[in-house]
Image 1 (cartoon, rainbow, N blue to C red):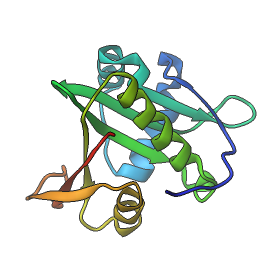
Image 2: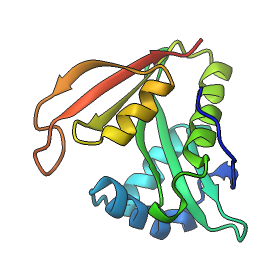
Image 3: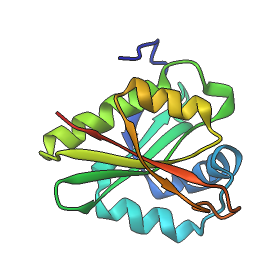
Image 4: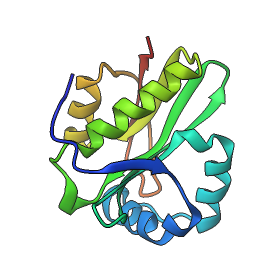
Length: 153
């Protein structure tokens, strides 16, 4: 499994994180969501909304996961600020999220990724995710996506 120096602290999402997380989403995921979305999704499963912070406590990455189907977790958003990539922060977030899924006795985790995002697809494959479906024009700009999944155990 991927490893690297984890250079951040993980904690739950706080509403005051929204401006920084929204910037990371625009830059990394090329999406723009209403701020209320982060609040409402974060309330569904607070332990599934993880924020990685730098030494000063500023968010540098996050993972927003939900439980929408019985026994299944879903990663809705996951991004690391460009300046903080390659430091093991994404690995740290994924490992923590999978552990939270195990603690909830979830059986499977799913996510969606742009077909053009080879780096993310490689990362997810390293964590034993497999492509299970092609989602035509899935993203707001019309790009296709892959749905990927893995067993939690």
